[in-house]
Image (cartoon, rainbow, N blue to C red):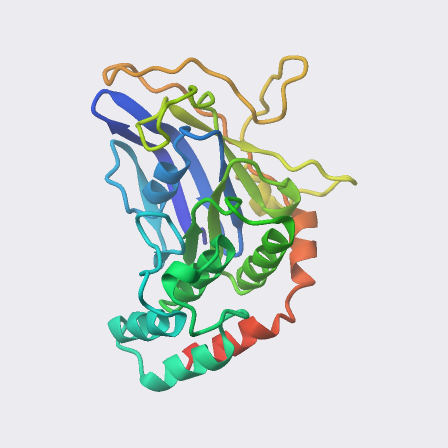
Length: 294
């Protein structure tokens, strides 16, 4: 059974659409990347899919909880609280025991120093803390924003190893990024809004972000399982030199205009899942799981 089904999802600000026509199905263990230029509506799409934004169009159906990891200005560390303080506070809000907090802090922080304060955390450490705190609620879906911002390649590899290990337990992962290596994920949802104009503030409402999921290029042919085949959309005609799933459309800002149709192509990702399964011996994750069950 899918954990998340989005149909015709759209969010607008006054007379301008930020994102619209998002159709997406997310199954247990899926890793979904929402990609696009600054101003294309990535964060808005992430928050809309996790029911943190009031929709202007369409609907989202979630099975289980969707929790946020690190999302700047929405879900982020408090400057004066330590990592351990954040864990204790979150578990207290969830009605969990002090014993659970001690178990997580002693062995389930993925290498984070429990004494670091929020203002001392690097972008990588903020993302990891966000994952830790999100998992405490035993969610079906975890969402993280700006997963490629401020992280070097080694840190990105470490973070993806953690996320892939979590996904093998059936939790779906949603992330946003400017670009994404398709080998890391099962689905790339590409927002087709044009690049942000020079000098335009990133927080300002952007042009229409229309979603198109991008198929993964496989080294060898991959058989499509029936469950994946039913989620695949129609093929998209491409102009010479155009990348798969990279669909340009004119931005329409009037509220009364009918939303354009959205092509959605979901990756088979058999190769990606095989690679992720090799990371199942992550000791930090096992300790975390032992801790939160206490």
